[in-house]
Length: 299
Image (cartoon, rainbow, N blue to C red; front, side):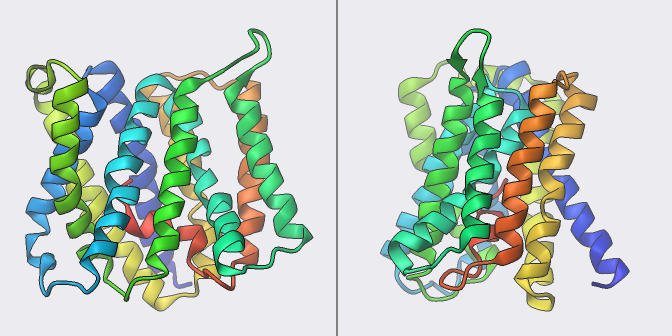
């Protein structure tokens, strides 16, 4: 990989990692209801990417199902997780989308997994279990349970994408936003309170966070990454994207003053090591499994 392209990938991973930290601040510290904030983000994405809605893709019904998996449901669970769990732990736990995609490709696409990837899958889950489970109180972080469910649902969307005609990253982003924002806003009106007041009270920092999520993550991040996908093999890019959770952990500690515990360090090392093994080996039935969520959903 050329130096300029590596710098571009480095910047993309930094943006993705920073976005989890920013979102954690919005839904936890600024107090913006998580489902409402997800709806606002998707509304912004749909508005900015309107030109990419046309020409109309084929299989709109399938696209709607994918949008619900990778958009509405995925982000409802992810943002609820961020409201109740530290961003550093979420950064690592969210990587379970990679082993989930591999397991689903085994179940539905006939993917065969050797002992190395099998070990990688076990390590990925073992590391997250270590992070999520508190042996002192014998309790599990329910915030991270939301994130695990989010990773699973996002992986379902990845399997559904295999059944759909090819679509560009930005067009997929545009339709994710178009299909997702209204259900999320309506659901927020039912289960949350004080949405608009809390969003307005957050002031310019919350508004900048929203613009960053739309322009920085969806337009720049996914657009740049899609450009790299067209130039380089997925087996090269996938392991390098593990810079994202590393940035997430570092920025969570620096910007949010989250503690760096031994359990987090050991769990992250085990889990990300497992994800690395899976990403390096790659899937044959679903080659894009290890990066499906990164190219299809605004992190």
